[in-house]
Length: 497
Image (cartoon, rainbow, N blue to C red; front, side, top):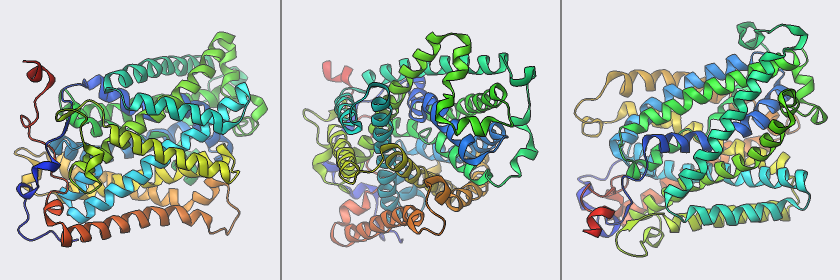
């Protein structure tokens, strides 16, 4: 998609750039919390790892997590290098706009909105089904309660959301740690098995599905970059994101290994496939029933905080794209002054989208877990993996004026290239196994609907960019360039003075 000849960021009307998110409100730890909480360790333990064992029968799941974490970490190196340089809340939109061209940026922005909204909305199905199973009632009523709570928190200042996420994340990591100790401390057969890290266990038929499910477990670790405008130190984006991948990769690998050790690598798939077996809670019972109760409670809160993290990212994408005029400008308008403590327009849009999706699946009488959660989360993971790959290409293609004065060979060329090579293999495994992941009948065309949705969103974005180029050249010229300059919008301390 060609650039507009002679177009420069300076051509952007100031009406699209004068509103800014509140700066210096998120510390490096806060950035890490958002990436880790979006991935939701308790959800991965109670849902992702159990489901992967049950559906793929891959015994070397711990090693699979390590390998996938390595690929995702490489992909995030270039992504965060560009994000740190640009400081734009709509990260994929800005990266592709500055690396490959403005049209590609708008296409990436729409794909990101589809992917993030899909993952966020899928969690309402999981939450509704979980609450209905524990306390009774109808799943969509519980989903509606969660909608109201997340929507309310999403419109408050980011500090409140960060505190909630950090509390639940810390407790979740504690429970996962206790689970690992319980599993390794009382191994099946009396001896710790290392089959979880045995490379020969990768040469099985279900490895493609296992890779795809492991990728889905890491979705959300890219969230810190969307808070670049609010970060105390923009340089911490890379550390927070890569630390989230590495730490969660280790946590998930240990948890998968401990589950295999606790039940036995030969029987873990069979036990995981039996809902009555109660994994992973049956392992926690070995160290006391209080840990089971805490884990069940934290699972509910972990789903909620994951929703909130993705909600916050979507709200910032809408805000940033509206600020540049690509989306309706009113969605970025500040209620007072020019600083925005929370992107309310984007928050309301995300809540409305989620409400429509919950209503649609309710009317269709679709199963909230088997259909809504599985299909939408797979759609979101597929979209975000495609965007990470595209971001690596954009990073390697970025010109010197984008890279800055001292670009590193590792961050801008080697890591993105290695990540792209590994990511293509992972994407092929994911697309090739999407049918089995969704439980579709052999030969069913339905699984191909997910890649078509991603492609359609990209095409619509490209068409809209061409429309802007022809009829609104001032907006087109500013695509991906609309972040206010450092002192264009005063900080709170300056306002009070």
